[in-house]
Length: 186
Image 1 (cartoon, rainbow, N blue to C red):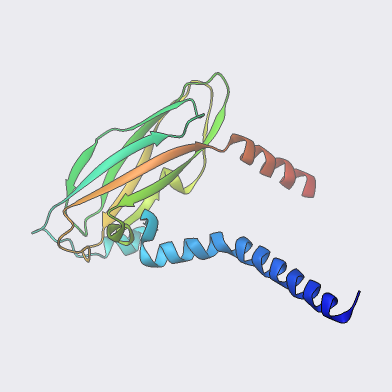
Image 2: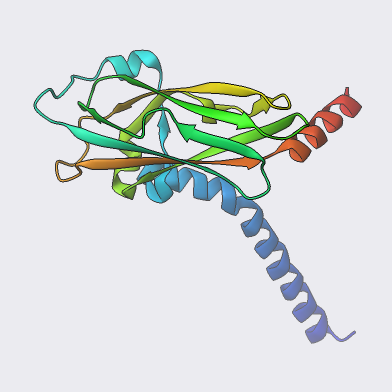
């Protein structure tokens, strides 16, 4: 191979390696950008003490709408107990959702939240949420799932309604594979 061809092959290999590295780093970078900017409706998790430190804005009301979806292929029902509530920014509130595994097998689900409008996402802060962990359901099991949240009083004044939407995904096979990998490493 002549020197010019060799340099060209090395450059192409470096480009491929750089593209692979960028693709590998894209998800963590995306999550950081979404957390900082509130893009894509990703919510924030805060400690109870931090949420309780907010000064409630008792002169202002914000309507919070709750939406629940189940991804195709997950045989569950999933719904909010209350579909909408009026809240004062800065005050802690509790909401509940109900999920049922309609399958004859145990399943593991993971809820993924989204907030609309996007600018409200960084102001919707949760201290407790079923979306923080995977939910294991026995066959036919029904369970109430808790949510505790506060709307940051710095939410822009023109935002009068915030929609919190959850979609449950089946992660049973992923969870089983992770468990098997962990067991073989120990």
